[in-house]
Length: 221
Image (cartoon, rainbow, N blue to C red):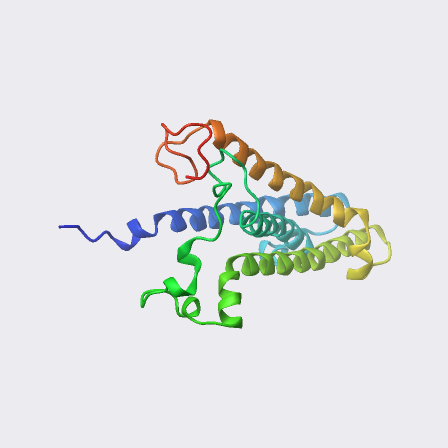
């Protein structure tokens, strides 16, 4: 007889990921607060309180420029893996694989999510909902990065006695795109490395790896 596992056991992976996120975002804010106050001291300006720092462009820009790149990478990856393949990679569907039978509405059961059992726009949206939501998070993060970056740019300009800029003007600066590109390139490098390395390397027990005894040419988990 199977034993019912605890809620924590059944959700340990998500708890670990979001727990690590909470720890690291707090640490980022603390160290960013210290960096910001060191900058203010250089200009002879009184230090920010921690709670005030959390409302500054310095914190928002650093936070959202990273979220932006993460959601772009994940959204693009989910979408591209639906159409492109990499022979031998655990991260790819098989080269000759088309849609899975389970993806078709005719295969839906009473336990299937309701949108998957419907036809029309609701099913189209649900069939692509993972990529849509991830890319929507990317767009929201992109805008938040832009606004936070504009605020930080203007905070720095005020300290130097320089004029402020609008969000549209900041969007056209090399500073904004340098921040974005330095994160975007690293995200795609990491995913590309995982795709290729999973052809030849293994991690016992991980669904991101092929079985340890699988030949290098096997594609998919």
